[in-house]
Image (cartoon, rainbow, N blue to C red):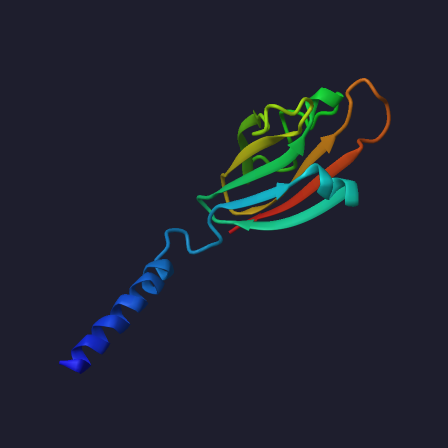
Length: 144
């Protein structure tokens, strides 16, 4: 009887591991990149690399404060839309609404289309100012 209880417990502990191993696309699945404005204050130009599953999504969340006139822009620049394409864009208001001028979050969702690689570029600046963007994010995407 004791042996049966031990084997049952072992099976229960291994079941979640087996379920993870049977995942749909066998790749990295869905991925999220999240950076605050403080992250960009420390480093103006950030480069990230990410692997996304063949039927996955990439979500990018970037700190933003439109009250300053700075914007990321609704449409990201994508080098290869046959590999990954923008599905949506949304600005999320700050949770603390009592604080005037508090930063919120710009959120983009991208769907994978085919295996391959692409680069997604985001630029944060004021549209009426000439010159380079204040902050940039470059995301090197590999779709498995």
